[in-house]
Image 1 (cartoon, one colour):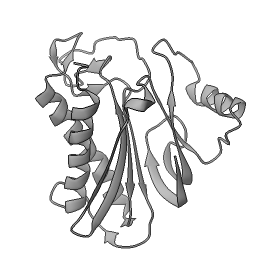
Image 2 (cartoon, one colour):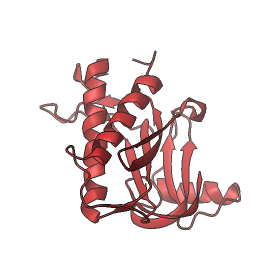
Image 3 (cartoon, one colour):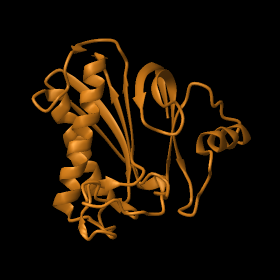
Length: 202
């Protein structure tokens, strides 16, 4: 995915982690048996082979077929935000389980990209991470997704990633928590995307 201009981005992905500015967002499909001791280096090598520049790129990985991605846009009350989400729960995990349970970590199965038309403060970027995570966990609970190791309701998968990108032009969003339209918009996008993406996968 490429945007017309560079977006300020907070990401927990494999490439472009932390805070960066970019116009290139890559959600790479890998098979479920993918493994690398140095995934970021391997990812860069993969992109070079594909003749895709790897500098200043936000890159996530998923074992979900990319054709199953959910793409939605929320526009209303002065807010405009789009999302691109791939979802699968083959490695669902309950992070609140009483004991740490060892597991084999397969590539990220719930990857969420958000694109905000507006100016976000640092606090708003982080609050959107919270909003997206809360919505993900609530939706997984409503869908009855289970951690196979603990037999309890899953809170996510073992390698989920989030990317929040903002144009840094237009309206200022000082906050983006659960009491804001922007935070609620992101939550709605997560819910509808997971309901679509996980249909028949639970």
